[in-house]
Image (tube, rainbow, N blue to C red):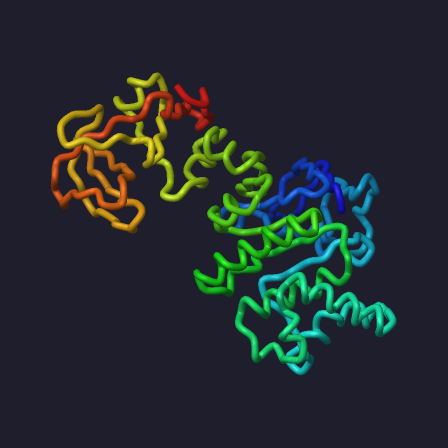
Length: 336
């Protein structure tokens, strides 16, 4: 396992500043997710940690050892990419064992490690198949197996589920989380999908324009977002924001209220509006409400909540569930 420390790490491509400079510490055995919008620098940061990209400034340490100028092979980390990069003419077993073959390991050692990795990933029955005979999820597991046999100090995942359909993404999410529990190895996972981040991470690092906006557990970021960017990025559906008179009543420039923290009534409430589009998802109903003051919010009701387009609707924030933000976008109190 590996502890990883970044100090003043920066990355520039010519005049373009991708990462202005950041500090980050990853504890031994943690599952850390880098999340943020496209172009925020998360994949670049992962490649810097792996050694595939050089730093423009700063230092990287693994288990207290400065590896800033150490090539990828010397860092003890294994990377799993979005593309599986499997050899189509090789069997699953040969693909998994290929890094060991290249390292010159003995055949019996390779066979033992391949069988162990295959058992961990439920691939034992597929060792003689070719990648073309596998599903997307199975091919991704082969790619992970190729990383496992190297017994790395840590795993680096660069959007590994992006090529999978929705159901396979959910299944692989669970499998990777279970793999982390089995191996106890440090894992860093990059995704643009905040749902993946929330469901998999011990710790989330939210990046925006190369800067760390906030670091914390999924529930910490959800319950106590540091600023408007975090509040709007973490959570699905996203947090509702209101300004003007509605915010002034709560002593803020902007207030934020999550859909599940709005009590719905057809008689009275703090905000009055009319129901717009309603999304019935079985377990939940999301009602998009057009407020009389011109704003729009989303409220979450139970799965069989009945409301029609144009019906009058009243909403009241739950006590202690209103997030208050100042004019700079910073949260001035976790909850009022």
